[in-house]
Length: 472
Image (cartoon, rainbow, N blue to C red; front, top):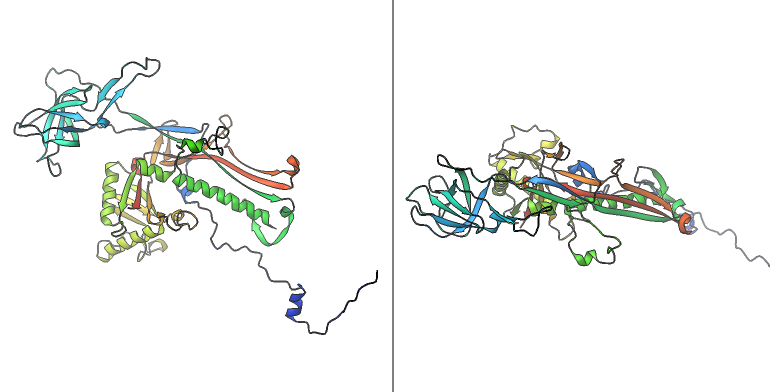
């Protein structure tokens, strides 16, 4: 076959257009990968928790003591001067304790109530706040546990006990008993179990055998810090960051599964029963303290005062950390700055280092003997998650106690927050695994598969010491 015509050299100067047209130019490509959004791992929650403990069960519990000192809540009709009045306890102030194994569980239970005869009550007046000079003092003379009622008579014959159609709280200030009196009934303190579950988290990525060996212009960093000009390192690292971020968000926001339709769905079903851990924010909203504020007035000094008063009633910690979104953080700064400008705040307690350029920013404040450190919680502002359009987290904050509590099981001090993880009961090794599988060795498919799995949950203690600030 004859060789075809080839024109050979062309009459033209060697120009950029000519070189580019022949696809011969070599562009200057920087091998360093730019990360305009930083590391892209949401790690704030985990840094706050710190403490962790292994468990060889999918469900874990700890016992918390309820309030020791009693308080009454009851309704009653109006009484005459110095006259006895019958009070009817609300449902929460009475209960029935049934038998448990090995006793006959079908037998009648025992009715128990809060008050007992001989106790002195301080009853609120019909209107206004109760003080020593306007309250009605009365003594409980009899208790009917089965009916959930008790009778009280004023100490002063001129006092009349006001009516309470709705449940009214009544405090007990002591007890008085006559000479030769009989023993009083025993009073027990309840213990409440707090329960949460481990949740199985998974992540994974795949790369073909060809792609695993193709060199790229960019130098990538793998999840363990290794570097190389291969894209699979970047894929592994990105998936691992997503894997950790989803755990972070679950520890913040997770709720337990209660929908049977979802539990029975084919994704889970009988083959893959699922447990879900309850996150910190739902736990605080359910059992902690909530400070609501309006967008108009903001979270001002009055709201701070109300929060301190609430924490004090709940035996809160004197040292706390406020973790606000960026919008609420700046609003708190503005509020504190306003009081500084009016002379309410001075800087004698501050040193003007990098953390105390307080013309625009405050890192801590004290109120009513309570200290609040303030640190912006970056997760609340992340554009891809809690800071997305239409979500209110930049205007919210967690208030976390900074003290320690006692783990009664092993008599060790622990923080009020900790994570639990599944561990081998014999070796104590943590059940956290990652693997790289060459599927060619399994089924002939030219793919490398990377898998991550971890089984973790959140545990909270004494939620009465926590608070959540949110815009109403």
